[in-house]
Image 1: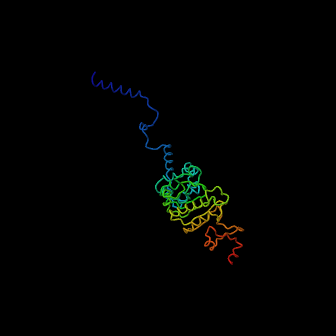
Image 2: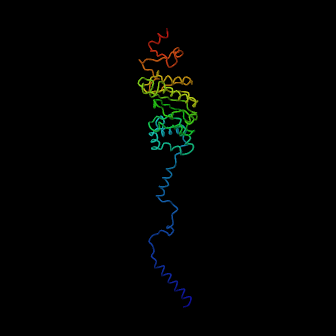
Image 3: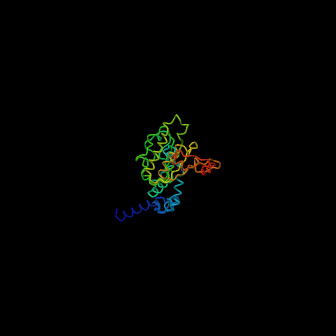
Length: 304
């Protein structure tokens, strides 16, 4: 076969093959099989959702507002922080301290707010292993946290016949790091010098002397204490041996004395007998034997 005829035959076969291919009725070009550069409706919704989830500019808020937000976050905590299972459950259940791990600035602000706002108990009183521990809460805290604390509490009464061995003021307690403390709250649960404790106490004046030594050690290590706030249960008398011994220590260190809300010593009630410690009684007998003068007899004694 001549070359020209062979070329003509191949051309006819190619045309028949092209004609036999079915033509699609769709007008979509072949280029649509590739991904489109334009987002679909679903992609538009996803992009919009991402724009809505942008982080809130918390650090751009004024410091006063940030402080109020910190206070709301830490509101579930009790007013006094101690080694207590209830406090631990609140921390783990609500993840309150997770705020410390956001960033350095929020960590510094929130941690200082927390430790400077709440009262921290020096020795634990929760029954069980925490009460007898040799490592109280202050000893477990880092030094930078102790430095932010402004208020401490000393609760007296638990273990009055046999105080735990961990109740001792030593360098391991870390009180010397509490440089910002200005207020010491002392809550007295009981006075073992009362007659009801006779036959049960370790000895006359034993627990009172033990508490005075604790207070002396606290004043020695925490130089910045300015005010001592006394409070007690209703059965504790302000003129008892326990309170008189503690007040002697406070007066010796020249601290300002305040009264807490539980016992109501700072509120004068109408019709209640006033207590007045006379200067001559203090000079002659000491504070422990000072006379108590009823309000009606006050003028008679003064004129005598």
